Length: 542
Image (cartoon, rainbow, N blue to C red; front, side):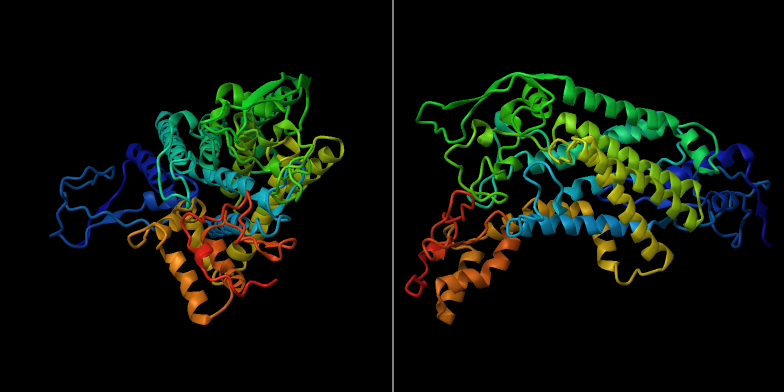
């Protein structure tokens, strides 16, 4: 005989909050996808009567918000259906990971897809805004209902701190790379900012806005949606005003730095950069760099900035190369591409993605979602291009407002297209690999993009560091097949490029031999650890 139980109203609301908190929480966006649950179905599942089918089942003292009308304690809980994932967002995240790995490994071969040396936009410049956009969409789904704002704030701060610490460990210089098989970092020289640090800052700003800055109105139209989240749009506007005011209003004085060519045995060589201007957006005298040098310290900035590939600093521009004879003094200066002021505008990208997540929450019809995504995407894209024409250049290093608009619009168009193909037309089999990568994006980023896998492979050697797996592979290929060293370089280059993307091989047309025999300053082809230079050179082409 089945006994029916009905929920008490006072506890039903608590259960709704518990289900929301349980199923709609994420630790960090790059590692976890958001989860969606239909409100109407949730309310119905909460109000269902719970039945006892077996009187021998014991309730082991767990508190339940569902109180039976009978005195019996045999109350098995009805299993709730697992919440559905937004597959298109997983695919979008996976596609961004693939794009990031592609530009890291192939960007040295094809400068056209590598980061722009300064002004302009290339394929690599879309990676960071896409990640931030995805973070915003995820937050819109995660915090669509918040039972306790203080608790949600505390969890958001802890998640941001986890990302920040992980970024310091991975990108602060703790791993010295593939050249010397050592690790550790002088704290006085540690890089403080990076990709994960920027994502942590943007995540925290967007999460706090989503938790605290929204009205209780129910959005049934686009105008009602803007009214419900008007405080968030005001916050985004304030951030944009602060960024533009500082970028074009602060005075940048002249400054100095120590040349990286200085050695410990010789006296340090101090280079001076003459500025004394306002509103300059060039590599030497911009406010973004000045704020980072003042607050973070020049010794904590990134030492290989993109502007070393400009025409003023490289004879092979837009690729790396030796300095021209008339190179300005700022060419060797550190610069942080994920700086403090530029991260303010990066947080705006996250807020834009938050709006796209709101559309998913409040509009269930596919056509409404697509339409409401394409309208702001078009507006952002046009606005960014117009600003670039009138002088506010698209610049990834400074994260200018025009750059934010163009990349946010592109992210909106791409997300709408993936949503159309995957979630509407159901092309999941063809995107299954990208979906898997999107679900495990953080671990893939750590292992692949941060050189952890190459360091592990390179770290196994026999008796001496020179006797490692890569050296054996090259030696065996050259000796057993009788091929020339040049052929070995050409054959093994794709494999080496995947393992050691900083180690780029090239051809020296003047010397008529591969640069792996004569490593230039930019590549530093790991001759201290590879036995490549010890191979026979009798068949090198002349």
